[in-house]
Length: 150
Image 1: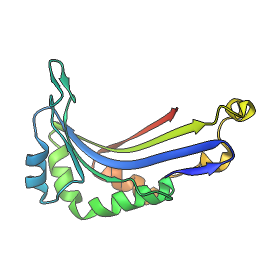
Image 2: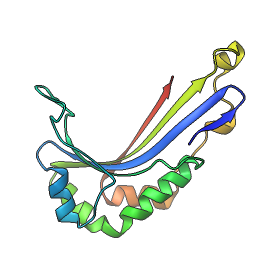
Image 3: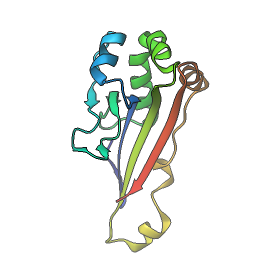
Image 4: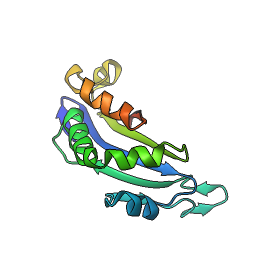
């Protein structure tokens, strides 16, 4: 999402990822019968140490003009039908699951008071419903939140 309020711009996206050192995204796709939006191959950019560090299978929402809450809902609604498959993959412990919320705040340098005060309060809030939290617990998924100032 990109939203301007005064001198602050926010870009954000949400994704659910399954990550593994050994199980490839292709294997995860086959086992779930569900095609991801994005995959990562362990060591594709650098082999020692491997970069990326894990194989990644991800379903994401990068639609602009959506709140974090709406993006979370879209991602979780897409993976709910494969919850049993996710549980089966995650249970042995080799594959990790997480919902990732990523936000970038850009403060315009032309207004120093905005930089000191931070982004307007209307840009800061979001929540996860109890139903979404219960679903994430049921599939043994972490929640990872990354907020950056650029």
